[in-house]
Length: 353
Image 1 (tube, rainbow, N blue to C red):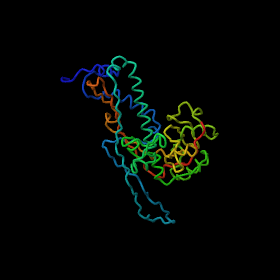
Image 2 (cartoon, rainbow, N blue to C red):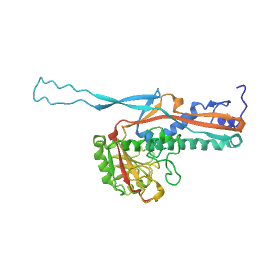
Image 3 (cartoon, one colour):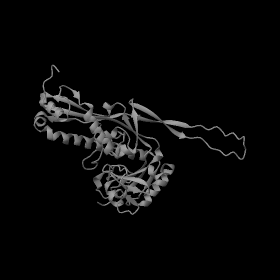
Image 4 (cartoon, rainbow, N blue to C red):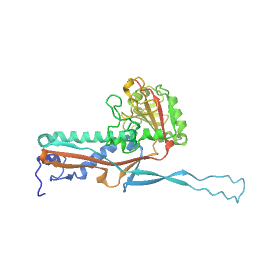
């Protein structure tokens, strides 16, 4: 391209990614992006468990049933005509959000070390976007009032709220996640500050009613310390007992009463009794965690129909700073069909690791 300064670092970076070398603000061809998004999708327990909807528009309304038909008896009459009953519906709105990063790399570093460096960079991008997605799916909350003090994660403070919202660009502000959906719903079990027990799980199943009628549809999401506790339960059918053809989610530790149990580092263990972030100013003695039980058919993940919007990496040369900038971006949406299909067990004492 005429008018552009040749950038050696850009040449090296794109060559290392097996892409055509050219100059100026450009997007890496689809191959590299498809490789990265495929690895993110493959490693994500949420993406493998929940329903995915392709979105050709930035906002999509998905109808859901709120009431069904009524079935009546005939009272022995052969000419009985049933009373008319109708399905009623409302909409679930999926709205595309974009998450983005900005990774400058010096031309000197990329020119001399790019062959060994680029695989590590791609692996870091996969890991970071995977963790960010998971954080959003679990801890997302769009609440901004009180300068984020009213958010379920609290406002970031290195001492008192280390897991709080760090500012307006925090990805967890993009949409509500499972914890917020559970808090806004009606299905809750209180562990009263005790360790998680099998009774708590069964109480949650009962609270969910019809949405827990088939345990195979249920996903139990726990922190790693609660996982350590559950591993001692005889009722937990551990993954090592699965058959050779079993499908195993990332983080899956087994089946409990037929429901899949997944452990994740994204479940906080610095919560209060109400399931919201707790100030650490008074020490850690009162810290609690939460257990989420979800009917897998209820949450919906929206994926852009256009391949280039699912995930892409833009390469922007900055010769005046002797560097290139990798700008990975991803579009996604998240929503929930039925409030009663998500239950949380709050006020759970973290397990002992």
